[in-house]
Image (cartoon, rainbow, N blue to C red; front, top):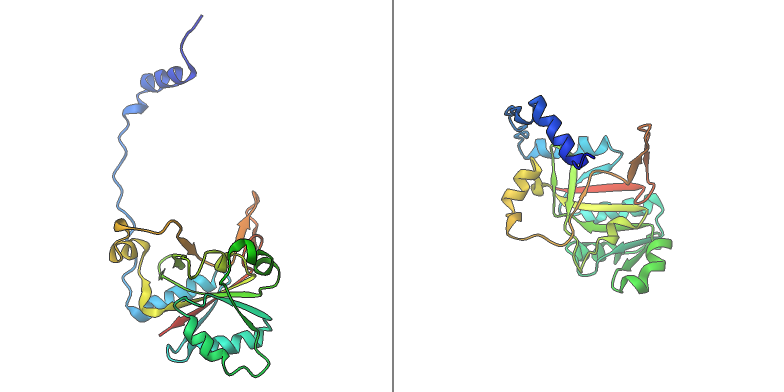
Length: 221
């Protein structure tokens, strides 16, 4: 009776064939683009629009007015924001001149358990800040925290992401090095390249199956 395990038999055959000693050829790592500030904005917008993202390049001084106009035009009824988040104050100021046509501005200030029904059933859009973005692959980087929990960008049908143009990096590696990610990261980080999407075994891409159906990016510059 052969006492060899299946693993041992496989390794023995590999040794006999000589393939275990086949050298792996060296390959150069792909080089990310080296783009200037304006080119990074253009590249990011093009990559994300290809994945059905709506991108607006807006003036940093009055971006919240643009957001207010979008909210009115799209007919959202309830917009979720983090009242202690980085984009809260301009949004609150923009909503202070409510003419009766704006959606309700809803503060995410309760526990998930207490807020779950509203979060998944009555909120039309959630707006968050963005840690940064990657131009070569077309992705946003979010580091959710207690002020802007990750469900704000994952649960509502529409996610509005507010990004500063000077936070767009050429590549993920460049961003990781510049921000010294090796020295500390959050327990959860998100990379978002467009609305929620999935594909079946026939390679049919379907959007909005298990997450936001729309992604709107406001690039402030």
